[in-house]
Image (cartoon, rainbow, N blue to C red; front, side, top):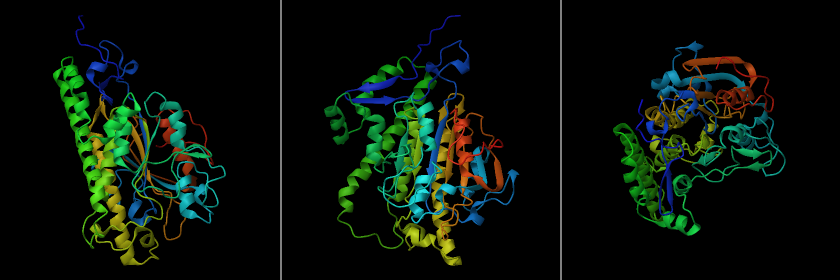
Length: 428
């Protein structure tokens, strides 16, 4: 047999003057005649954690039916078309988020550590977050062991803890995220030039891309062209947001009912996360969609109250209806991201097939600040390690840490125990 196709390393990058862009998985990266499991095409599992603040109204989140083919509730409805990739997990309790004089602070820091802290200021030990356990085991083969994103700077804390006393800062600026992923200049001056340019980063690697096309078949060429177009679109959106920053300083607050740019910010951060996974820049990510105690007003949804006061609804029916608009909106943005992953080829599967992403909050009833049961949904199949299309309801007070250990193991992390975990959720 004659093998004429040129083989590319999985780490092949398009390089130009001060820029380097990773590539998605191509057929040319798979050595001909080798076993799939031993090649670059073997599934590389991604692990993600997407957090929304202030919990969820349980009766509109948790399905009534248990097992397969459950009915999607009002808040989860935007994910229904991805049923085969959805696992709702109910009945979990996070003791680490309880009994704190600063519940919103503890809620954030304990979601992925399951270890709480009394007080608001840094200091004192927490726990290593599950994403960082994963970063130590499956994140060392990628340029970024993990990626931490948010939309609102500051907040009470981070979701990610490398050590019990060292948190990882979450980045809210898409421009900084973009250049963290793609602006890998050889020198500080080159990186500075890229960040300041108003042109396209792709202009720096055009010659390398044109050269690469000569070595690829038509299918791989199309994959690369589609991918670079996604990079260009993300770059355009980031630059547009950057250009608007100075203008926004001169404008008054938007009147009630006028849209703001929060949707664009969420979408571009999600798109950058998808690109990071697609190019194997990282396999571990956390994304906080909004801060605890967020005072954002979702006026484009017809909601005039700030998010945090609205979450203290006092069982007022009208306030709950407005709160539901916000919670459904968050799911809609997440669902758009999920569909993007489903559309990206990753070896023989989609990127969604090879991912496991926890979508949830660390607060049950926001009006009471409790953490039992916490709303949790798994998106993705982890390359067949997660069944999907299930609503699993566990006995009351089953440790949330059990779910975190389970997710870690499903993507190949040898984590046996963390915090108050008592085992794995084998049904997942």
